[in-house]
Image 1: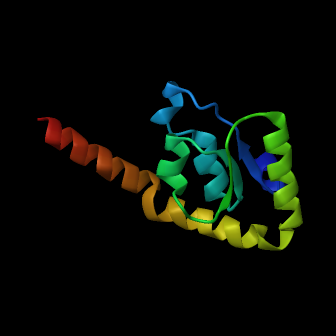
Image 2: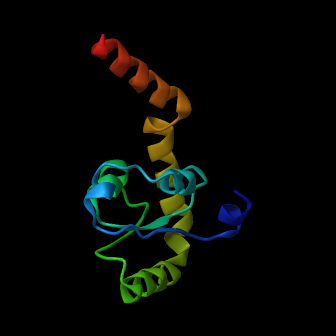
Image 3: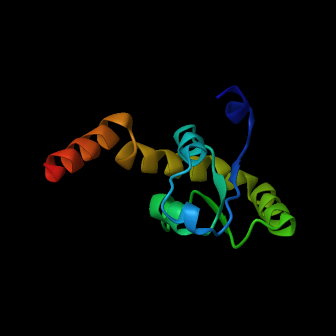
Length: 113
């Protein structure tokens, strides 16, 4: 948390690989919870969390030039970063608190009986 707090933005450059289609990267949720806008790869796992909410910048691949261009876009929109961070926090508050995740898991387990 200390290093995330010192950052202006979080970067989650995951490859477009079947493993990541359904895996939720914990660091993405940590960045959003700490009101950090994110630079994320446009893959199903990230889309399922962030969707169309404007809380960061999607990149098409993990090529260094794409990441560098996204960092530059974030820098050029520095005035919007706090707003994007607040939108990200709303995503976590609405869907991904431990209580809400536990409730969903409990419902899933009761369905499995």
